[in-house]
Image (cartoon, rainbow, N blue to C red; front, side):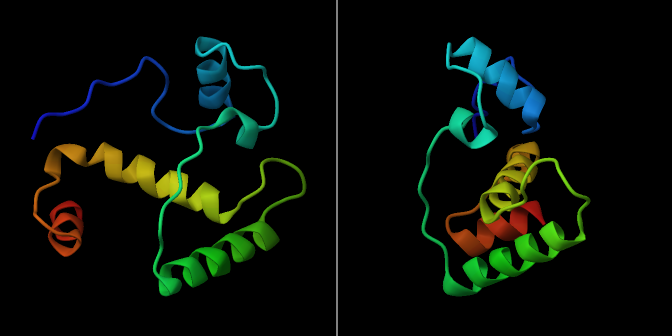
Length: 102
C-alpha cells in the first residue's frame, strides 16, 4: 500500500499544529474548531455513545480552562493514532483493517 505524502505541519493535532496549518492555508486565526477541515462520518450507535461518555468524563476530570474535550477531539486523536500505524494497514473490510493495526 502506497503511503500518502506527509504534510509539512506537525502530524499531532494541537493548537500549535492547527495554528501552523491556518498560516499555511491563509485562514484567519481563531478558535481551533474554526481552523479545522469539516469531514462528516457515520458512527455506530455504540461508538457515539462511548465517545460521548468518554468526552464528558474527561471534560469533568480536566482542570479549568484550556481546550474543550469533545467527541470530535477524541475522533481526531483516534485518526492521529491510526495514521501513525498506516504502514501496517491491510485488509479488505473494517474488521481486518482494525485487526491489522491493533
